[in-house]
Image (cartoon, rainbow, N blue to C red; front, side, top):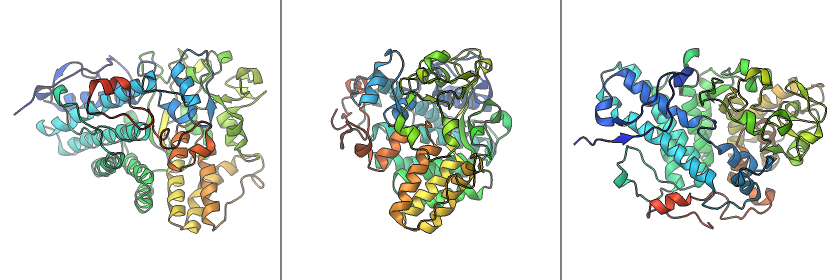
Amino acid sequence: MRTTLFLLVFLSFTACQGILDKDPIAILDAGSYFQTEADAIQALNAAYQPLVFSNENNNYYWAFGVVTADEAITGGDGSRPGITEMDALTYTPRTEEFNTFWKLQYTGITQCNLVLDNIDAIEINETRRNQLRGEALFLRSYYYFLLAQVYGDVPLLIKVTPPDELKVPKTPKAAVLAQVEADAARAADLLPATVAASEAGRATKGAALALAAKAYLYDKNWEKTVEFVGKVKALNVYSLMPDYEDNFRKTTQNNAESVWEIQHTNLQLGVGNFLNQWWASKKFEGYGFAEATESFVQAFETGDPRRKFTVALNNEDYFGVVYKNSFSTTKYGVRKYLQPKAEVTQKADGDINYTAIRYAEVLLWEAEALTELNRVQDAQAPLEQVRARARAQASDPLTALPTIATTDQATMRTAIRHERQVELGFEMHRFFDLVRWGIAAQTLPGFQTGKHEVFPIPQTEIDLNSALMQNNGY
């Protein structure tokens, strides 16, 4: 029996680039909507929308990964108390950012389920059907991975569910990650290895394989992590860019190092990157809501060129102006995802993409998993690839960033964790790394073991769903 479902997609656009080139669906009858390939593509395009770091989405995933960690403190004017609470680890189930993020991910999941539930009912070339199915599976997997990172156990919904059937309990995090692993692997079988430049940002085989590898990493399934990283490498699609900063420039995006990149466009249509405003110094027309810490700056080895690409120091260039200590209460200013004024029409509408999966990180997953398998000598090669790229850009490559040649597991583990910190700084991984490594309590003042590994389930969701249990300690 066909169930008639109605879905409200929260954003509507009439024109934008790439994936968001067609209008997302508005209110529709899901049972009768899917009649053509164009219908399916339109619905799938809407499934990408919650990824964007825009003011319309209010996607504060960055605050969970960056401000709650030791990379940054809260700057700004105090107008976002939730971000201040994350910095101090004093957030509660009523902190607005958690509620917004929860809704955003489930909006994306519902849209993916809508596609998956109906894609078989339309007449379409089978190769194209498989690609659309693969994209929807990948996106749903990504949304569930983020939910598991942030909240731990969450409701797992893998079909469009009528409102009266939504009051379901949480699914254990391990089962959610297992679903991510299975669906991402299935998506990889359906997706192409590459897409046309005009389709940049759409899920590919490599992105799906990499997402599966990351889920296995979080599961501490080291063998599977190595296996899936191997599958990514076997595609021969990805390589490190010679210039590290090319991963954060407008003109060199979607490059060979980009495994999966969330697209942003400066068109004043709600698909711009708001980090250009939220992270910029208040003396550079920004909000200054993430100010780099002294400990993060000191983590860089002497001569590591990645520091200057990540953080601005006194008297250094800062997108055409001279950075001064007074630009930040910590003296240090973030550079990633920021742009010169001339590149954007509105400050909050930046068009630097967020590379959610970068090949350098894939190599570091491999090094980490090999180390945990006590294959320390094998871990040297992927770690050295990452360090060698940075070394080549140093002012003195002969002395900077020496090769890590240890065969001691504990020493190599420390080296890889350090490399993640400096290679991936301000790319929204740090807090989740500290948690999965089990060292957050040693690193973050006020962190309570058994509580702060996950964030609270939004109180509004608890109130709406009597089957939901709050996370421990909240």
